[in-house]
Image 1 (cartoon, rainbow, N blue to C red):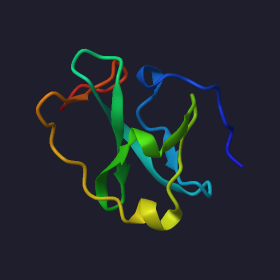
Image 2: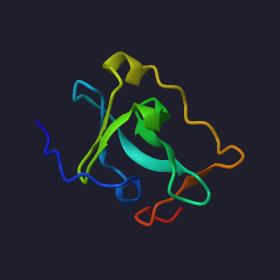
Image 3: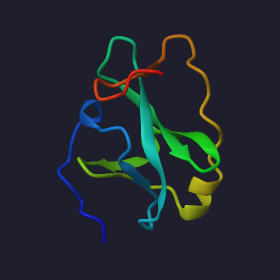
Image 4: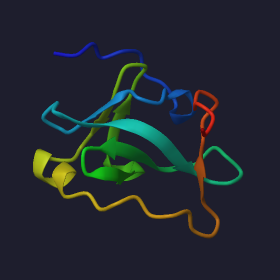
Length: 103
């Protein structure tokens, strides 16, 4: 079993941490977060998967720690996630301070 880590706020999540389904299976890694432009309200996360970037809504996130994000999704639901949408009005994809600069 993976090290659970210390619980953190979404603003302290680190790019690249594993994102796991309810069963504990890793289905991707954290790419970025979607939050309110004024900050403080998490809408969801973008997960880098083998099938491309996928969006996980905040209601599907059970726990965020220094070492992983655990979702309430089953393995089947995680495998069926839709591609991450572009930023909509009133929302933004936020590159966290830990993000590497675009090359």
